[in-house]
Amino acid sequence: MKTKMKHLVTTLILGVFLTGVARAQAPTKRPLTREEKPQIAVVEFTPGPNASGMSAEAKRQLQASIAFRLMKTNQVHIVDVRHTREASQADLVAVNGASTAAAVRVGKQLKVSYVLTGTVDEYNTNGSATLKTRLVEVATGKIKHADELSQQSTSKMLTGGDVEMKTKVLLPIVLKLADTLSAEDL
Image 1 (tube, rainbow, N blue to C red):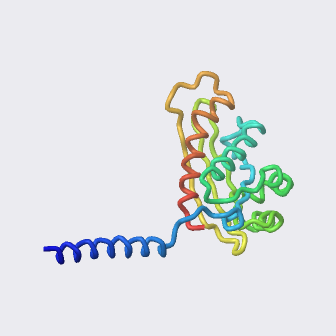
Image 2: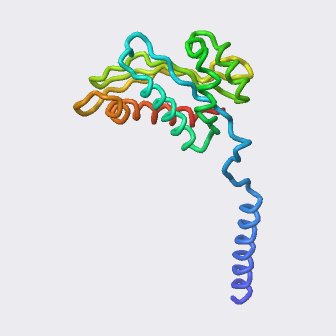
C-alpha cells in the first residue's frame, strides 16, 4: 500500500512538472510592438453626388474617427491623419478613385504598408449613409480589402446635423469597418 501511494505521488508530481515544462516552452501571444504592426494611412474620403450635404468638417471627423477606431484595435499602427492629409490633399479624388496608383504614391511617401481609401456614396442628413472603402497594399498596388458599408439611423433624427450623423449613422459604420479590418491578415 505504501509503495502504491509513493508511485501515485511520484506520478502526480511528474505530471505537474511535465505540464509546467510544456507550458513554459509553448509560445505565448504577446502584443505586437509598433514596429511589428502593419502601418496604415487613412485618407479623407471623397463625397459622391449623393453626399453633397457632407461638410468639410464631417469629412475630417470621419477620417479621424476611422483612424482612431483602427488604432484602438491594437492590430495596426495608424499614421497621424494630419500627415496623411498633407500627403493626399492635392490629389484626393485620384487617391480615392478607381486606380490604386495615387494611393500607392501616397503610401510610399508616408512609408506605410497600406492606404485606406474610400468614398462617401450617400450622406443623407435624414439618417443614412453609405461608404465604399478600399485597403490598398502599397508594395503591390493590389486591393487587399474592399467593402461597402451602409447604415440607417435606428432612432429619429432631430437636427440632421454633423454631430447627430456622426453618432447615429457614421459611428456604427466605422465600428463595423474597424472590426472587419482588424480581422484581416495584414
